[in-house]
Image (cartoon, rainbow, N blue to C red):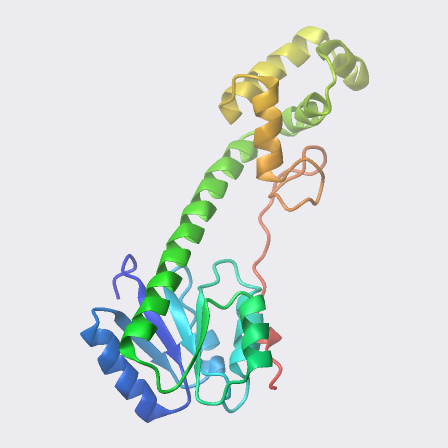
Length: 234
């Protein structure tokens, strides 16, 4: 499988449907991979493979909604399209509110399905671009030393060099050197830009969702959740 080629992953316990939709998708120019259950899909996750997922609502074992819940816990969730023969309005509303790209019923016209897939693939591409930009941004913060992170915490709170030096019991010259290094590593030219960048990275407060806090422990990387452990059968 070409890792750069978007793939449409289809999760459905109906083998005849998997065969039919595989022909349809391949005829439409899409790469296809089928799974007979949510459990099977999560046992062979796509990782960071671009694409989208088409999933049935009712299947033996974990349902399509269970799969949606499990995917919400992974690092790179793919956009999800429900395609079912037994949908209802409350379920479809719930699925959409939880982030599903669309909720379609069988049988579905190829034109409608392809339109939903294109929206899902476009959404996936946007989300990947956003994650890439965020990773690049957080990499800059990871380059800061623990003392620089500590100084940064004081700077973004509006303290002057003299105040920071007094708080940290170091010379003002040392603080100036740390600030210059911080500005260079984070590629900013002003304190206002520094504050905006720090807010965008989400590292203003310890545990605020960034890979590191401004003060405290050295940066670390969170361990992704195990989605397959979050699948109670419905």
